[in-house]
Length: 203
Image (cartoon, rainbow, N blue to C red; front, top):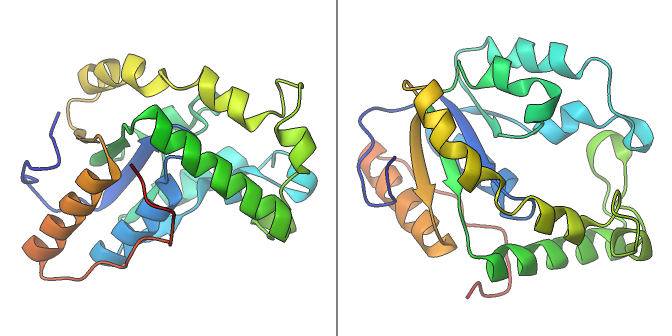
């Protein structure tokens, strides 16, 4: 497993971005995709149909883009069968293993912003009302879900490394490390990087 300061042994063309809800997977995937000219597929957009209903074509669509030569996507929906499709094809996994305070603050800001602004997302869905997302229902409380899944990647990543030895894994422990890694990759490839989406300062 590589760190932010380790050079990549090759230029990957199929990339997964792992991390707990709210860590910034989609933002990073978009920036890396632009830097390396990779198609960024937002996997949430394939999964969520109108009114947040799961799409029956989800796995078929995942298989379709995974068969392409160049892509980057968020490493999600492993319980829905994406592992059998994406992981064997991926060459690089970027693991956002950020501190709890960072991911919690990011998730709260993102959720409040989307809900208050009624931001249109995949298939014209909008975020659920704040009282539902922060309420007592464990199926809808996004903070409870984040807490429940905080240790997911730390528990599973060693197994992934063993099962998929072809997969290069880079562990990024803080947004500052991620920015440093992005700068080094841009310098190595002679490209530029897009700035991150504006956020409050990550501590």
